Structure formats: C-alpha cells, structure tokens
Image 1 (cartoon, helix red, strand yellow):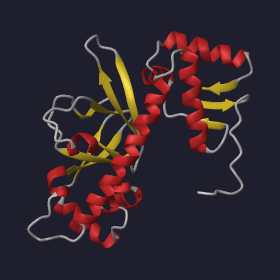
Image 2 (cartoon, one colour):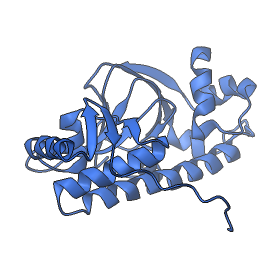
Image 3 (cartoon, helix red, strand yellow):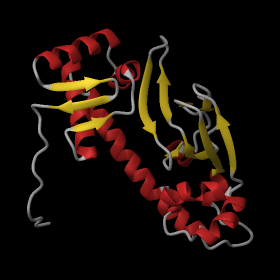
Image 4 (cartoon, helix red, strand yellow):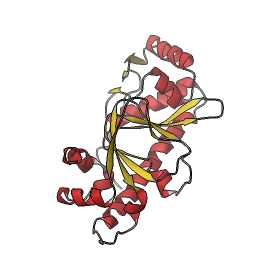
Length: 232
C-alpha cells in the first residue's frame, strides 16, 4: 500500500501521523483497497455503516434517491477526502444514502470500530485518529451547510449563482472548474436539467458569466477584496 502513502498524508484523517507508522496503523484498522469502476456503488444504501472510506484516486459522489426515483447529489469526493464517516460515527444500522464512483476509483476502506476503539496492542495513534476524525466531521458539517445554503434559494438562477460564487471563493478566482457535468449539477442544485441549461444560456447572453463544459468564469460578480488587516 506504500504507493498510496502520499495521498494518505494529505488526508485529514491521518494528519500528525508519521509515515513510518502507516503500515502498522493500516494493518490495525483492517484497511483494504478496492477498485470501483465508474458508476459502481462504493457504499450501498441500506447497508450497515461499518466502514470509513478514503478516496485514493478518481472521484465519487454521495447520492440520495427519493421514493419517486429523483436523484440528489449531496457531495463530491476528491482524492484524499473521507467518505461515510458521519454515518459510521452515528452508528446507523442502515445507510440513508449511497456513495457512487463518478469515475474509475480506488478506495481504502477502514473498519470504524477498529479506528475508535484502542486495540489490544495499545497502538498510540488511535487517539490522534479520533481527534482527526472529529475535525473531519466538523469540516463535513460546514460543507453540508454550504449545500443547504444553495438549495434553500427559491429559483434556479439563485441556486446556480450561489453555488458558482461558493466555487469562485473556494478557488480564489473568478475563473474555475466545477466537479459536475450538467446533469450532475442539476442533481446537486435539485433543479431540472432543461431549466438549468436555459438559465446558463440566459446568464451568458446577459454577460454575467462564460462557461464551457465544467469551466466557468464570472464576469459581473467579482470576488470581494480581502481585508488588509484582520482584527480578530
């Protein structure tokens, strides 16, 4: 598994863990690496929340499908990010969502109970992992708050512009690439694809933005300048 160590070192779960400790740590956690082809299910809805995953390559999406078959993308996962941690920590008997590979992806699955419960060998890294997990959960909570901020808007235009402004702020630039194609973006915003495409075309004509596939440039909504001095 040494080829994945550079990715694990970027992962929030393994911060402050020495690279030399990773082999013993992964063995203790029952780590296993699985290759999932595009559109295959990594964590299935209805299954027990027993695992925490670390995306090693590719990309994944947390998806919820309602009674009528409507799909909502809750989150996008990139290499080095964690998946399934909130549900495992909640001790859910059945996952309420599914995690799907958005492209061919390698995922490291870790047994949650092994992570949070010190083993018989009294490995010293468990306490650090639990602290890191708490921080990762706090970050994930912020991301879901951002998603709620988007979907709380009333119109497709408001949802789209709120999302794009979030992406621009995250990228630190008015020109950026989003992680979704048009259908995925519609699923994330919880709007119809036809209406979304029409709104993007309208915003282009109005000179508000430029777009080509996943690349967007905001023309009339420049990012605010950062304050020269922070007082708090």
